[in-house]
Image 1 (tube, rainbow, N blue to C red):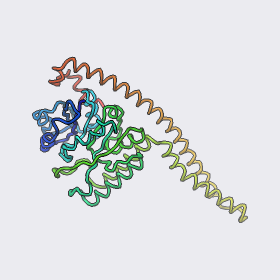
Image 2 (image 1 turned 60 degrees about the vertical axis):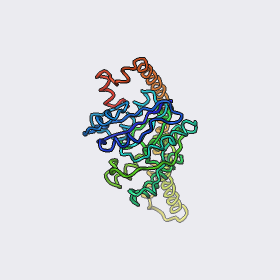
Image 3 (image 1 turned 180 degrees about the horizontal axis):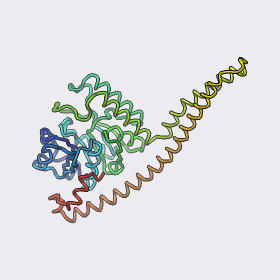
Image 4 (image 1 turned 90 degrees about the vertical axis):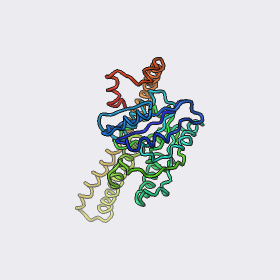
Length: 344
């Protein structure tokens, strides 16, 4: 059983060694542990620090491409290097690395394919009162959208089985955390959470500049993810409001004309009612089209998963046949350029 621990990095030279030193060297149920960093266009010596420490794999982008792109590139590299379990953690040492054993336990026991670390949000001192409330509210919205029971949706401390990692597809460029839970819940991937500890505060978050920006992007991410995986339900709800409003206006017009006998007039109500009913029906039709597209997307995802399995298995076997290349991490420059540009 092989575990690869990946760490997305962007100018993390000052804190990376602290995070790496805390990582476990051996765990019960794991035969082999390797470490991987995703260098997301760092302008400092993050890569040098990682290599000097002795990380096994480095995935680099020539420029900053965001947390979601970096995460998926790391996932891709872990799978290509034969990971049976993948753990994602942060370079600022936010999460307690001693809890990695607890994080992977449900996967080893066959109870889950994705495990999310639940932080003690209310006890975290450097979180403001507003941030704590927004974290709880955002997690509640994700639970409703995904039909899961994950109490800390924004947590980036996660473990994935190989089967779950093969199915991951993150299209959002902001963050992977929220969309991934919605995807797991709506595609019936077994997902659970375990309580984890956090370490001392080392630096402020780089994911967002303001609380308003965080809330806006998070809500858009949740709506987009829900729209991708439950389009018919989404458009049915959206189309129901104008349709009901149109029916109500139409009934009002009929009552005025046929019951109250007020004569001419109120034609505007009839026109508005007709427009609202047409809008509602059109939104429902869009929902049907989106549902067909979602069904096609599921088929494409299944094909993609099979292609990934074959691709990763072939590459991993090639690496096993050439252990010296794997050990020195030497590749043809063209291959290296492809990996840097994100084989995502």
